[in-house]
Every structure is written in structure tokens, then in C-alpha cells.
Image (cartoon, rainbow, N blue to C red; front, side, top):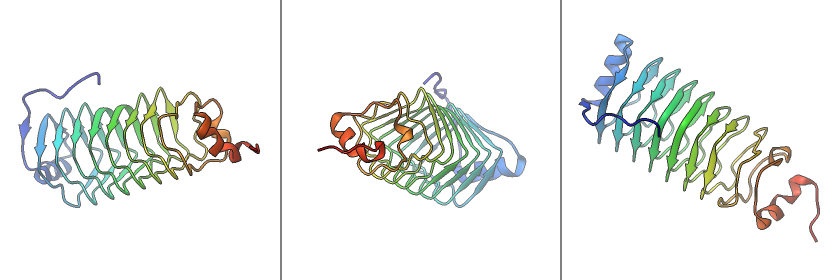
Length: 210
């Protein structure tokens, strides 16, 4: 991470701060939220900057064209949250639950996901730059039509994840579990896989192993 939220942060009730920001069309800057619940709120064109979120729930919320910069999310629940055309920069997600969430047409730049549950999450189609997924559950997640630049997956469960029309050139997939991954074959050009993984992917490459 290039920047960290400042040590001295303001506090407030998450739902109240977001509601006020929505009504006043103002940004949420330098706040700390802990053990709080956002409610089923809809945020549009708001910037969250320099904020820390710990043990917060955003289940069922929606965010459209919002900005999330220089912020940290720890053990937060984003299950079934809908992000649309949002921009994430210099953020960390640690131990977060994003089960069934969606992030359509979003941009992720310098983002670190660690130990997050992203099963059945839809990232299609989004752009990733300098983004790392480490020890995350990505089973049945959808990355169709996405683009990756200087990004990586490390020790992730990716069974039945979808990568149709998503080039994986330069991506080292050896530490990940990718059985049942869904793609057409051309996406694998330039990707690094283990010999065992290559056997499982042979059908996409049009080869027969005997």
C-alpha cells in the first residue's frame, strides 16, 4: 500500500454518516467505523477516503460510481452488496465476506484482498491493476471480460471460477486450486501453471493426454 489512513480519525454511526453524505452530496473522509451496520442504503457518486472499517456490515447495500481510496476494510460483510462503476484505489480488504456480491464495471488499482470469502462474487467486467488476491475463497466467482495488469492470485481457491474472454498472460496460477475453471482456452496463453494443472486444462487446449 502506498498510503495508510491517518492515526487520528473521526468516529460516527455508519448509517448516519452515509445518509448525511448522500443528502448533502459530500464525501466521507477520515472516519473510523467499528461494529456497525450500514443498512440497505444506496450510495451514488460519493468518495470514501482515508477511512477504516472494522466488523461492519454492508449487506444488501448498493454503490454506484463511488470512490474508495486509501481505506481499510477488516472483517466486514459485503454479502449481496452491489457495486457498479466504482473506483477502488490503495485499499485493503482483510478477512471480509463478499459472498454473492457484485462489482460490475469497477476499477481496482493497488488493492490487496487477503483471506476474503468471495465465493459467487461477480467481478464482470472490471479492470484490475496492481491488485493481489491472497488466500481468498474465489470458488464460482466470475471474472468474465475482465483485464489484469501487474496483478496476482496467491494460494486462492478458484474452483469453477469463470474467466471467459479474460487474458491471463503473465499470471502465475501454480499456488491456486483451479480445477473446474471455466474458460475457452485462449485466455491461458502466456499463463504459468503446474504440470498437474496443465493436465486438467488440456481439454481447453485441444490436446489429448495418454
